[in-house]
Image 1 (cartoon, rainbow, N blue to C red):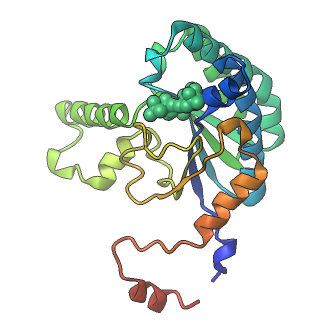
Image 2 (cartoon, protein in one colour):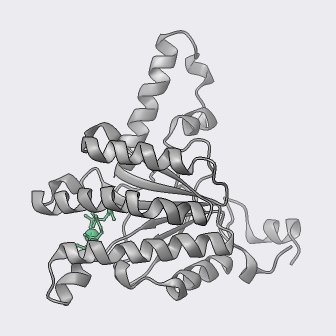
Amino acid sequence: MKSDSQRVPQHVAIIMDGNGRWAQRRNEPRTAGHRAGVKSVRTVVEESVRLGVRVLTLFAFSSENWRRPPSEVRVLMELFINALRAEVGRLNAHGVRLRIIGERSDLPERLQQGIAAAEAATERNTNLLLQIAANYGGRWDIVQAARRLASAVQSGQLLPEAIDEARFAQALSFGDQPDPDLFIRTGGEQRLSNFLLWQSAYTELYFSDLMWPEFDAKAYGEAIADYGRRQRRFGLTGDQLSQRDPA
Ligand code: IPE
Ligand code: IPE
Ligand code: MG
């Protein structure tokens, strides 16, 4: 068995928070923080590939973020469109496949087109699956899964008795991927903000006081190392686990 410090999470999920405060502290507009945050995205993507993380899920825009001032929402959408276009080459160079999760139909048309193009351009890559959550909410995800299952029942393809936890999980946004092992939130707040509600049932939580634009390879490495020191018990006792996996 690998020693604890070598244990790398297979799936990391991150709430990239603190862009606005980072900028405001420097007397810059909040949107300058969003622009600066793109660099941290690049860093965690490249470090994830290097460390052997298989899935990285980043929260970029929540179902609730539409409530922000329209000018900020506009800049975020613009930034997203430009980043998709500008980063595809880099993603391909690192073997990263891109997938967007969330309710796409409410996103600007140009963004939906950019998403489809970037997903298609990277679909053969296998080093890392990068999932960007845009117009995503954990409750939205559970509701859309329920709706999908209900229509399968209605059309006679599924029996209600056949709906169990595994079947439900498959109907969620990334039912083909494992649940996140490690959740990181930057920016100092300690809450889930409607991120991966179902999928985080047994995820290890890690909170960093760094603002997202400050989150670098060292900070990411520390989070991964912290994860490596944890014992995940999934309801068992510590003794049961040490019998199963002698150190
Ligand atoms: C996270 O940073 C990015 C998005 C939510 C889009 P914030 O914009 O929430 O930054 P703070 O939390 O206000 O500092
Ligand atoms: C969560 O951050 C959403 C993203 C990082 C995209 P928020 O800044 O929107 O969360 P709250 O509002 O502080 O809970
Ligand atoms: Mg915030």
